[in-house]
Image: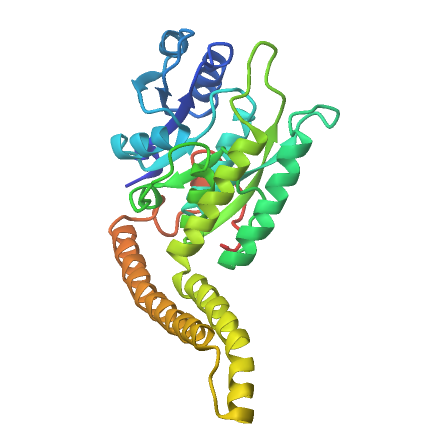
Length: 331
């Protein structure tokens, strides 16, 4: 495989983006030579599909509402060497795409995360609630999964084929970015962050994000992923709570038994014993699930290893199709 033979596909999820989709498609086709642009229309009612088709995109449809459903469908349908994921609202700077693709090929990396920087410092592209929530989620996920991340909610990313084909997407809506981030951490793929331009939506374009509603969904997904991806820690904490309550209830009973030789509060003693049994059962469940999780990760890793890196080994940056500079260490 040579660089000229690389198939680069852009996935553009859209729901009522008639004001912007044509520009996004046109910018992608003009900026990235040979790119195939796939616009996935997600129940639009404003003619988004026709405008995208007129701009030169291949239009496909996903009728189950939600960005996560779109990404899952696109990753299943499209066969490419490099995947570019970008929103159809024209808030991300398409001009940064060549540098991101070059970084992926140069590494080679499997995941390039576009870290947003406002093109106009005086703009309100990054709403205060979203920015504060993003920072909090970044710290939470970085601490829980052991790798630093600067902008886990960014919708501008580049993936290798082996990342995409080993990604078991389960999210339905805007939580998909969190799931992508956690998958890259769990699989420990080589990845890199690249700054990208971010701006306000153009006039007439309306955001579909809800600060609190989507924030709670992301928080719920993180809790689910902790239970699913860190079962030993999750069940260890739950078991510890059961054990602590059991000890608190049992200590007065043991003291009284030592003084009088009697157990007058038998229901409390029974409750304490039951809670301690639950604690040990919870810890046992955590151990079993930890083994299953390890086996599942090994299976995902084997799927990942079935695919080659996104660029031939030993390719120099001078021969990359989009230029590029010396690569940094992978995360």
